[in-house]
Length: 342
Length: 283
Ligand SMILES: Nc1ncnc2c1ncn2[C@@H]1O[C@H](COP(=O)(O)OP(=O)(O)O)[C@@H](O)[C@H]1O
Ligand SMILES: [Mg+2]
Image (cartoon, rainbow over all chains, first blue to last red; front, side, top):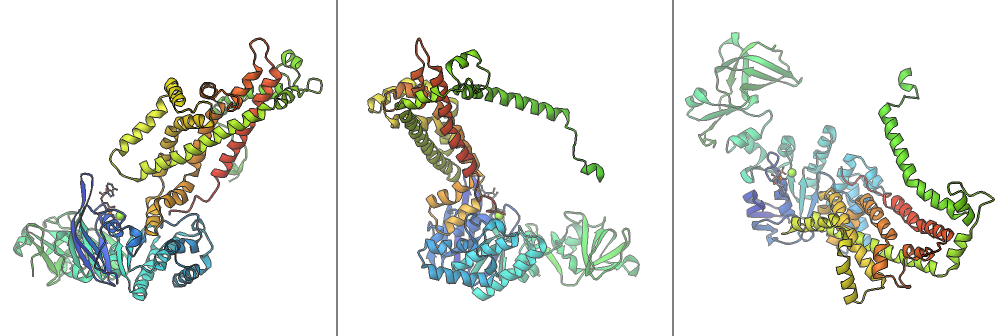
């Protein structure tokens, strides 16, 4: 229950083409995350799946049934919004039960289903309150509860954690992962947060400018990005990109090395592949980020190489260091930015 | 610490000036009203003898009210005014809010143009069309009916209502409406149960701005509904203003009484509508 299939979905607002032919298959029970920079069409794609916006062309199937121009309430979906979107005049219990009473389900059944969901999300004490009397985290749990109560075959989340503070975000993220395991429903989740995407997803869809750049399991995207964009987008801090001679020597237009794959040694200990001076160090305790100026190397973007060293290593600004990529951890890209197979 | 707690912070000059202007303006607005109310409780001699003094034991006289209430038709005029005002108000708020919702919520060809056309009515006074309106009312046999006045006032009130309400409706969370759609609420339910309660303050504002000119209007009652059966209170008060003698006691008493219903409606709107659960929907 809850498979989803998009074929050649495009969406234009007037003359602006927001989605340009999206193809995607989601198996029942899968957790799919859409990531991409702001404005790339993630929300629009989600709203098309929900039926809140209608695609300009293309077909959308849920459980194999053609859903083009089926109204949202009849698609067997539930959606959780970034802004919670709770009904301000209804109590928590009635917020959660409204969709069911619209479907004409008996009051006793509604009560039972609301109670099941509220037990799952620890909302029992709040059932008689109104949204205005809840904290942000509680509101988001109610919004999730409202989705669960409907027992949809497909859950849609649009950046549900963006309005929460960091601690709450981590907690709710784990809660959503647990829910997915318990309910086994298909979930489509939009975020621009790396950690959410990597930790929650069975499958990540990277979008840019209304086009799917790559689809794959999180670690597959990390290990084998299809192109420069995906390589730069997945992983934090972002990959170092180097052009010029260093790349040419490896028969590539650009090469990429992740900060965690750069070995750092003091210059005196023997030459690294690239030599430079530390321009800034961020010591986080568990690891240390070094930003190294390498004037001789053609670094794209910032002009500095970023290295991530495990543990707290005390380099001072100005120290000269040598940087060497780990063997087999260099990504190569051609003139068009596509990956060159190893 | 002690300085921060010191209570009497001297007012800056500009603030005092602003208050002075506001107090003068309030006095200017309230003065005539108080004069009418005060004199309505005085004998005829006292009204002319000392128009600016308050009614005292020697000058207190309810003759004006006795005349007005004794003349049975007057309560009837009141009822007419109430029917016309409440009827027009209901129509303006209902249709204005619905049009505003459609204009702000749905994308359809001509949306912008329609909005512009509706706001054009704010700039063109409806009285310019009096002759055409009268012709229409004659043709449809609506002269001397409440409906004639209600239709005219609805047309008069709609443009500003649509304009103000659509501004506010654009501010209502899109997610909230979409959540309703996903939960299977009809567009009417979304409008009446979700959106309208959230724009209550705007509705109250529009109600007050719409109501007062309708209640006070003399022009259209005189032209399309001057008959005894449909006379409104403003028109009715003219009975006491004669070509040669004017019964000032009765005129002042009638005007004082005429203020009361508007005052009640005003209090009703400013208290009832603004109250309510509007916070906490979003974020
Ligand atoms: N209703 C709309 N009308 C016109 N343009 C829109 C509308 N909704 C979204 N867009 C445009 O579509 C693009 C993608 O928006 P969106 O899907 O919200 O991006 P995001 O990936 O940040 O969620 C943006 O450039 C936005 O301006
Ligand atoms: Mg978005």
